[in-house]
Image 1: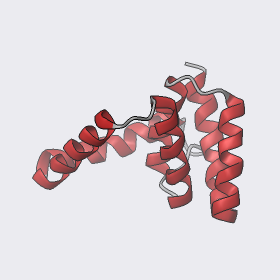
Image 2: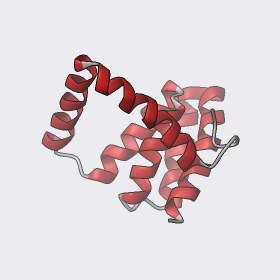
Image 3: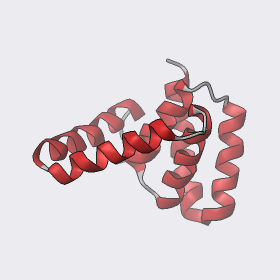
Length: 116
């Protein structure tokens, strides 16, 4: 499911709903979420830097739900469109054609989330 099918916020909600349902049923997933929270809390990186890294990894791993989640958080962390485009260029350098396709989706998501 891509942002071309729906608005990016709807796509994000679709993915997060499934993840939240799984977490309710799986102590292992709950433990993973605690690990993520602990790792983020103890990080010496600022929020924008962390989200830039998360977006780059999400694009090169081709995870649309991850892209939407972290692009939203990146916009909330105050990233500019110019920073986003610079990041997307680097993703395409490392990820080639597949990263290019996901970069277009990520830019659309950034534009949507940054406008809110």
